[in-house]
Length: 197
Image (tube, helix red, strand yellow):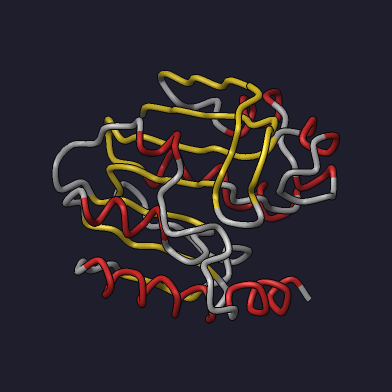
């Protein structure tokens, strides 16, 4: 059901969340030529942006329509990305392989989050970075984007537990304006996470 939903959303001509990278991601810095993994990356706007910065980017999404749109955007921008159509519920991330892992509005039910999030620390190289932005549980009152299921939204305590192995971890809940295509538009409650291994 969820895959059908995303295929329908990404199958439209326009980019559901626009073609511009996430604002929080754009504030981050990575070593030149970093190997970056983008999870639940949809139509590829963040992956393509990172490739434009000179990074070696692999993105994963389980929607074939999203993958097509990502490849189309990469061609449009004249960059290369490795776009993989895979289901994160069973995906095992390669260990000690990535300079950065990026998850932008990747919302998972608890069982997938419990499978995926604990892998991230081991998947990063020493000094590697996690960058995550997602809607908080308070987002339900704003109705400006994101899941309408409380279990798919995040709280600081959950993320602190998921990423407890990081040597430095910053988790902040804030209210900000999110303007990303037609489905993320308006004042929103978000959680921003930065972790260093």
